[in-house]
Image (cartoon, rainbow, N blue to C red; front, side, top):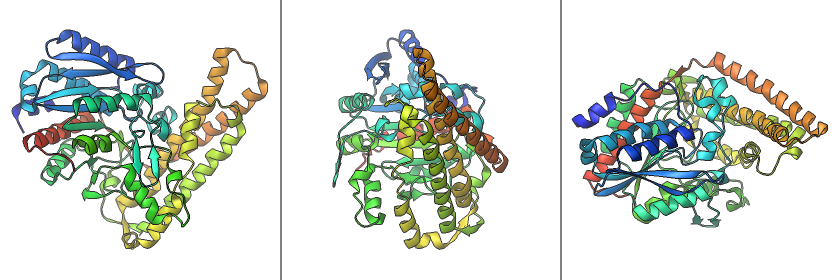
Length: 468
C-alpha cells in the first residue's frame, strides 16, 4: 500500500457520533468554498420532500468514480467515510494523483429517510436505542431498489425522484467505479462485488482484521447469494431473487406479482457502462460468535426452520397490533408502509422448499450459522417492533400539530403504541441478555470501508477492469 494511502488511513478521526443531513450539507458547502479550484458542488435533483440532493465533484482524473452514502437511510457509516475522504481528496493533490479519478460524491442519497433516523445518530449506541429510533422505508420507496427492470414477466418503471436523479448522474458520468456505501446492523464484515476480484480478497480481510472486527461467516443475507469466497459475494440483483422464486416457490405462484420493487444502481450501471460496484457491509454491533466455525448444536436446516417460525410469529404479532389502529393511519405514513411491506410476501414457502431439498442444510450448523439464525434474526425483528411504535406516534404527532380532536382515534393509537412499547422492550431486554455484543467505534468502521474502497478502485483502474 502506498504511503499516501497509509497516512490517510492512520489519520481517520475518532468520530463519536454520526452527522445529520443538515450537518453533511453544510460541510459539503464549506468544502466547495474552501477549495474552489478542485471542488465543485451541484444539485442532482430533489428528494420527495423537496430537499436538494447535493453532489461534490472533486479532482480531474482520467476515469470517473461515484460514491454515495445512505442508499438505505439507517446506514450512515458511509456518510462519515465520505465526510473524511472528500476533505482529504480536496486538500491532497498526492491522493488525487495516486487514484487518478474524477470523484462524484453524494453523502446522503436518501436524505429524507436519514432524517427519520436522527434520534439515534448521536447515541447512545445500544440495541434498544437503535431499534427504538430506526427507520427503513418500504422497498418501493427505497432509492436503490427502484431502478427500472424488465426481466421475464417482471416489469418495473416506477422510479422515485431520488432514483431518477442518480440514474441521470450515472448516465452523465458513466463511472468506472461505484462505491455503494451500505452497512448492516449486527454481525460482521462482508462484501458484494459486481465481478470476482480474487487477488483482493486477502487485502479486504486484512482491513477488518486490523480493526479487530470479525468477518460475517454466518448465513448469507439471502438464500440466493453467490459466494466468491468466505464473506465475499456476487452483487445482489432482482434477477437472482426472481430465479430463486421461480425454482423454489410453490407451483402456480405468480412470481412477478410478488415483486413490488425494481432493480439497483449496481445492475443499472453495470449493464450500461460496465461499472464495477463494491459494497462493504459493516456492523454497528458484533458478537464473536459470528465468526465461530466450530460445530453448533443442531443442523443448519433446523436452525433456519426455527428462524422462519420465529419470524412468522413476529409478523403475526405486528399484524395483530396493527389491526387496533391502522384504520387511522394516513396513506403516506412511512412507518406503516414499511411494516406493510415487511410483513407481506415473506417467501417462506420457497425458503422451506429450498432448505428441504438442498443437502447443504443437512449438515450440523456452525456456531456462526446457529447464532445468525437464532439471535441476529431476532435483532432484525426488533427494528420492526420499533417502527410499529413509531407508526402510531407518527399519527399522534400529526394530530397534535394539526389540532385534530378525535378521542376514539387517540385511544386506538395510544393502545397500539403502548402494546408495541412493551413488546419492543421485552425483546431488546432478551437480546441484551443473550448477546454479548460490542459496539464498533465509528473510526474503525470508516477505516475498513475506506481501505476497501481504495484497494478496489486502485486495482480496477490499473487493470482496466469492467464488469460483465
